[in-house]
Amino acid sequence: MTQTLNLEDIKKFLPHREPMLLIEEAYLDENGLAHSKYRIKEDEFFTRGHFPGNPIVPGVILCEIMAQSCAILVKDEIPGNITLYAGIDKVRFKNTVKPGDLCEVTASLDDRRGQLFFCSAKLEVNGKLCCKGMPSFALVPMEGK
Image (cartoon, rainbow, N blue to C red; front, side, top):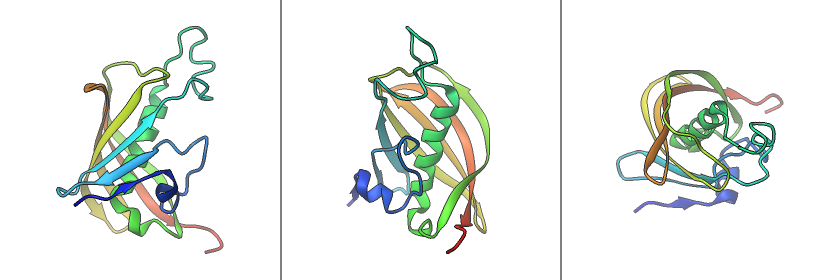
């Protein structure tokens, strides 16, 4: 059985906070895949100037949504650490994402080398692929911990 994590549960694991906490709900399935959701709000800071009159979520934000979703794969190892991007490979943008859209991410852990994690992720809206890529991140101890 899968356990759904709500926003408060997610905050127990991810060090991100609003306005950069970009997943609202997540769960790990029986196959070890992470699934997460985030609805793009009308007043997001990143769409105000991108573009006035035709707001579109920047690609870098889509990558961040995917990366945070990937971190859920190792959520139990995160407390006391921060997640830092190590890279993102093979990124492709297929469709735009706009305010009001519900982003749904599926992520998998492909490899691990110590505290370095290599993943694959895809972000869809209404079943349409909008972005995909292979994020990698490191777990780094928080200063003062």
